[in-house]
Image: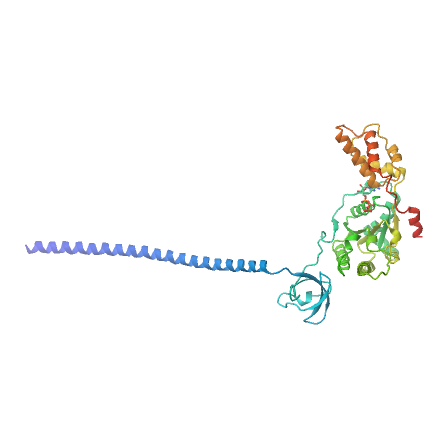
Length: 414
Ligand code: ATP
């Protein structure tokens, strides 16, 4: 009996201890699970804290952007003079000059030099930032071609002029040592004079192509600006750009717009044009004539040019580009019809005879017009009939009577 009870007691004790062990294991497992969850929750909490910081930053950024959108626009001005370490004179883009201060935390004092473009606060007119210079070609109406696609063979009837321009523009770029050896300075600038559409731009482009130079074209009237000092600044930047892109050919078309003979009418507009011309002269004078930037000017009004521009050492070589004569016209017709399908009856010499006084540009227009008429009539090739029609259409004004005969022109420069 007592043995039985003992064995019962043992089995009960064992069962209880197993129960406790199971319970403990269970509790340990739960503990592990809970620890895992805690870790996850902590991770999540860290993640949300990070997100909170990120969103707060985003809110700040958007707030400042909003603030920027709310701020009034700034005025653009040009530094005229630096008075001392705190004050400077600026000319606002609306005209008048002001003595202003600048915000030292935004502006580097060394950048505040006369001529620098700056942004001004609208109320206090304090300089808030220095703007980059407007050397973007489109800003000042420049055309920059790294490698133009015009060849001497595409210019008709100007053999002499091509020869001359090769001598004074091409040679100094391709064989400067020849000038050095002899100790002679090539002309700094070349002036092409002649009626519009006779191939002046074409000639300048062809030289640029032959010498692998960058072709920079600017039209004189683009340099005539409304505000004082702007034109001169553009000239300065133009020359700086030509030097940067050297070897380069700087072609100033319609140079008469800034280089008309000085007549003191006292108007501020006149004075501004004069200032631009002075800057141009200064830039030309400061140039190394043996350097690899060549300047070509073009005008169809040489009669109104300021003599200062034509003085030796400036535009001291003048090349006349005449209206093409009969042979030249035939050659220009040949160049422009080279890619056209022509009927057998087309006689280029006859076309040249029919187009007295036409310029190269007119001839190009005639050829294009004849081509268009052929397309319109759905024909396969351009015939004499289309050319005759085109000549009538293009030359309708009996050719716009050119203001000055070339004889008069050349007399002026003797
Ligand atoms: P502008 O003074 O108006 O600038 P321009 O003398 O510079 O005139 P270009 O721009 O060179 O004239 O010529 C205009 C177009 O006429 C050229 O693109 C070319 O197709 C044609 N052309 C003019 N002259 C000739 C020429 N001698 N040979 C062939 N084409 C010519």
